[in-house]
Image (cartoon, rainbow over the protein chains, first blue to last red):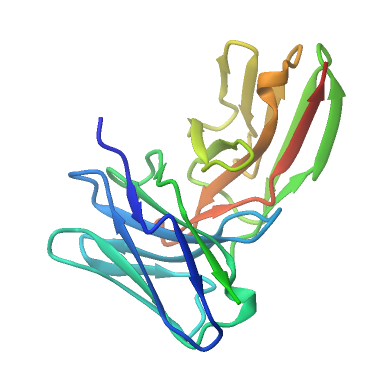
Length: 112
Length: 111
């Protein structure tokens, strides 16, 4: 069965650079979530999209933006990267509201 | 905003001992979900509870949802080394779109 696909799996960037993370949700899932997880931390909700429209916003810095495209894939754009942005970034999708979330393998971002 | 608290933060048990993690929300939840994350892995859905006072079992795992729908627990009977990981509870925000995770309980099981 198809799962949530994230790319790249690993990314190394320098401070002040930009990064783009991609997420391909499970087909026919109507909601996409983005999370940031630091070492030993819980996944922090960043932003969500329902049917390609932003549906909720969490602790996402202003330097970050995200969108969902017509084919339902989503991208998280991160600019002016800081050392503290180093983390695991997960994308998850759900088929419909209040159902289980399926997580991708994550993108490990390292800012040096 | 909604806060989901989880205790304990860590638990180290001997194989065969029981384990319980507790989750408390500052607001009433429409439902609560539980996830397990193995070291180096991604969160994997375990179960969802919807009804007040609901109890569900999955083999050695027992999940409960409080009567007020503000708290929940996960109990593992006779832990095994394969139970190692971090267990998160998660609840939907008031908008219904955000899924907010608790801090998680990291379980370590030694043989």
